[in-house]
Length: 249
Ligand code: SAM
Picture: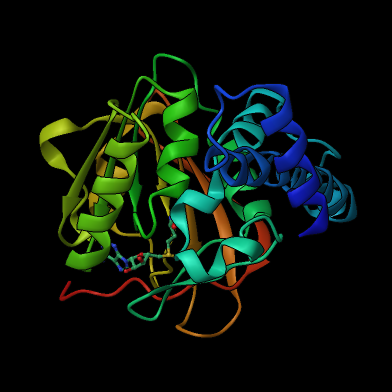
């Protein structure tokens, strides 16, 4: 607080053109920026710690740049903003969570998003993962089953200027056939089996990143790759813990 007051006073002395009210905003921005860079370092450490699972000890530079750029604090409830850059999931209401930043970075890296990619995300939640994808892809289609979350994510993404994200409220088990096929599909809630519609909506050469397993138990994060002849190659990457994929399917 003292540091803030000192900054505030010196800025007021420097120029009367900057209203003092803008200083907390500037100060918070700086603090968030510092916390975000620390989060990036922690993700990199965790990637190294899990390198035996991942088969590598760093993620793509493009992905890490997107993580360093997107303001995670804009996607969490206001009371949790001080914790926004901790490398852990946080509650976002409706008994749902924004995923751990390490997992967001890892899933994005596994999806290998190219600048011309059209990507589907199932499980919009806060919209944070969609924003990361939107930094890398041509267009992101994201589906959320809980209406208030979907609506809030749509508002947040629009406020932050993400014009290349379309949000829909519905059951993502069925994918989004009107916009298929997709270069990549990320599922951020765990079904017990891989949904067939998502495999069908993947382009040849495309990747589906999905946690699979029983609700509230350890699941396996899988990468399914569709080959040109339509065959699917699956590999298990890492044990993970996601909320279940819900819906009537
Ligand atoms: N990607 C999100 C983010 O960046 O905040 C975090 C997602 S949270 C771990 C999982 C989300 O999947 C929840 O918001 C949940 O409501 C949603 N979900 C669960 N089942 C779903 C389904 N069948 N279709 C669409 N969304 C679903």
